[in-house]
Image 1 (cartoon, rainbow, N blue to C red):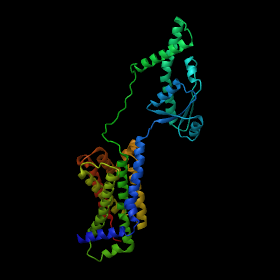
Image 2: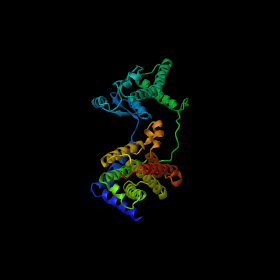
Image 3: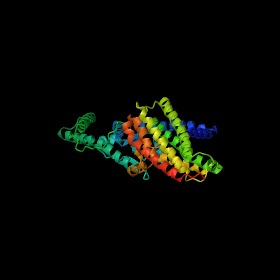
Image 4: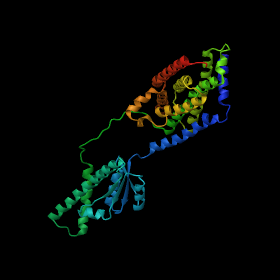
Length: 399
């Protein structure tokens, strides 16, 4: 046991021999957690409806009613701007559509004359179709009560001519109000429903970022276990072990113990930082969190052991560790939620351990999951660990 601990302590000293290691061990994970957490929280609160730039040259109540109807849509929203600003933003492709409500819009509608809304769309943006259909729907909502009011005015005038324009306008306004009331209370003939999976999770951008960055920034150095093997082969340390009574199992246990210990310390620091700085609730069942972190750490360091039997140099090992760690983090949903991936990709990425670790951590931090709920993830992570260890030990050579 003393040999195992001595090897673990030696690897720890070697890793932190350079002061720059603290940058990767602590500072960069904290920085990326803060940046991605802020971005994710902002995205969750953002209005995801398609923006339609609107130039209101009329300014009358009916033009305002059209804009309010657009804003009540679940698909589009209006951004009212002056003509020059709207044109600039449309040319910069900040929005897929530009709608102009012409001057005299209300006067023409009140007199029963047709009015053409000027709408420009960006043919290269698929959201332009959404914007166009949304504006058509909003115009229909505004136009139906208006058509009923105009018809009422015509019918009333046939029965008894109006005494003047003031009486006509007053009758039109009252008819329009009545038509809007009746339209709003009309029975629903088409009801749209969407299948929504019940989920008690409360989105927390900082919890997502903390979980993802914890996985990525502990995975990369644990994969870096491969660099230790490669470096000691290059320097002849492994060959010299042949002249001692140190067994292969003792050496491997020492390396794994040291790397896993440093990984668990790093994860504990990042968990504590997330709880203190971002008020992340890691659950009221610490055993679940602890077991998930240990299982993930074992899977990651085991992958590093296996990788160490495949690389030829320490420089190659370091490069592969960083590239593989970032790639597995991306595939595992550590940088972007898996819900935004295509369904086929969501199934395929369960072939990597980071996906199972990320799901477990988000279940704990956002859904309050306990040990029974995350046991399937833990079992899979331990399965990855066993597989990688077996392959690594089988292929391990001193030379």
